[in-house]
Length: 247
Image 1 (spheres, rainbow, N blue to C red):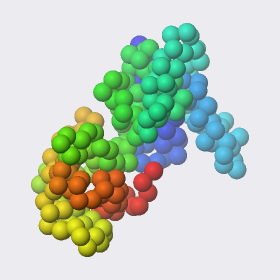
Image 2 (image 1 turned 90 degrees about the vertical axis):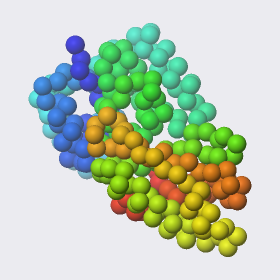
Image 3 (image 1 turned 180 degrees about the vertical axis):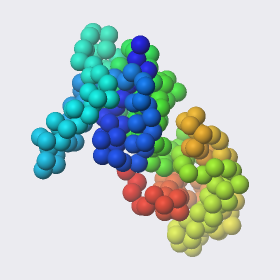
């Protein structure tokens, strides 16, 4: 019986000692873990890019065997269909899944084991597949739907333990974002009052949070939602210590 399926980023983080590698190490300890050959190829590619690529491959391959991780090499007809179905399903979406991600998900489904990852693209399928994030994906804001002009979305953020901490922080960031917009026609008070925030536990790890933001219809009429979201995201990223990287 397989306990976990690993994707490339989880092993890369483990090998390189990146953030979240301690959680991957916990998963590798006393658990049967599998990685698909396609995803293992991604790991090898990442290693090969460095000058000491060949030696790193030998070193990490030995580490992989010591950890007891199995490389799953089979690709049967059902898996091919699942991979193709996933890729086609997300073909026209902004958060399109890479082929390698589709293989990881298909293997997770086939073996009925959770997939260990940190790829933010997996957020789009975590209601259909069992996903375990070894570190929260980069903070993101994604509109979910528009109702009567109002927009609802979610921000994923870690390292906040309670609503008493995060909501005031976000309120302050909203104020700062309003200042950053520098829109003379936009009443800042209306801007600040146009958002409401609700915090919930996320990813069932006890450390991550989902912050649901609602942007009122009044704001979507006053200002382009895409620019509002972008500006707010920049402000929250900076305030949370994530820097300006929006990728």
